[in-house]
Image (cartoon, rainbow, N blue to C red; front, side, top):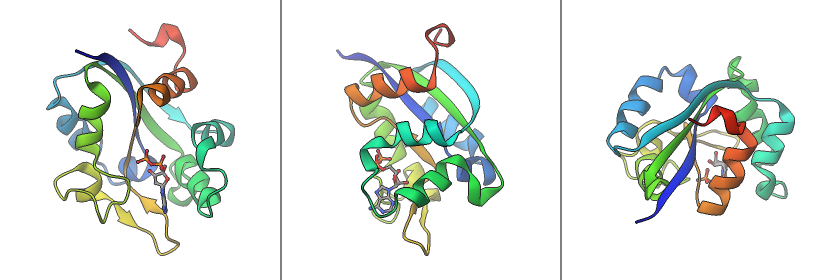
Length: 148
Ligand code: ADP
């Protein structure tokens, strides 16, 4: 048994499309515990740190605009930490793969994501991809006293 925590972010398109309730319902299927939750206004510095591994990619500047909400007039995201057995894999399963066109149609990204004309994958939700990334991301987005 792997008791672990994972970071979920409902991205600006998810909020704009009023998908919050729907996504939380889907995630509740995992029976994981929510141990952190807050609305965050995403500053560029936070966005750069969160996506530092993609800084050489051609879509990086579009990605920064996306997560900071620039194209949406919506600079908030909902950040959550889910904890429990195999939390990372369970949440990734419900989120779906990165490319929304290739994601399982019943996953969140498959059902609600799209590819923008500029090529960016607008995929509604972030979910940590490994235990190292989850630890790093939770530390970046939450103070220790915000995790219950
Ligand atoms: P994930 O979010 O599935 O962990 P990455 O960390 O590789 O995947 O990418 C971060 C985000 O960058 C993705 O969720 C998506 O919004 C965008 N993205 C990733 N790869 C591409 C790509 N090849 N083309 C366009 N956008 C991408």
